[in-house]
Image (cartoon, rainbow, N blue to C red; front, side):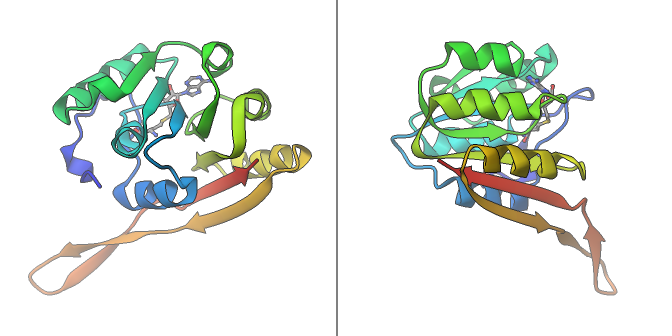
Length: 186
Ligand code: SAH
């Protein structure tokens, strides 16, 4: 895993997804070296880079041009540009032009989540996974309901991670935001 402080960041772009969350996402995605991955809402590129290291090819989509620029900088920094195509479009638009894939990662949806899941499902290969990570309380509920409608096999986890800050007197645990990870298998 790439350490959090090894990413170039931009003030208007969220991310990178914290290292421990990236670990769980990689694990739940079952991504492997012949897979094609679509990362909707690539942001800083936290998940894009981890998928690029473990798959055949990644399509990284974001509607914010600063996000694509930041992801591109991070891909260069880590020598991964050849494994990724950056797409400056809204999720639904982008999904129309992409070939079939094994993993659909949704890290940002802008209120369009059910449509993105349904559109993505059409191009998802059998046994492929759709993963939704969210900080908002409502998002997982939407994801679960939509995936149930599609008859996907569901896995839901909510994690609250605290990281140790090493001080002279001892180790102070700093709590990070709880994150929910919803995974649906086709
Ligand atoms: N996983 C990223 C962080 C994602 S932040 C990382 O690890 O770095 C969420 C991103 O989703 C933002 O950059 C936002 O611009 C993008 N986004 C939100 N809704 C979108 C949509 N409908 N289409 C494309 N991108 C979207």
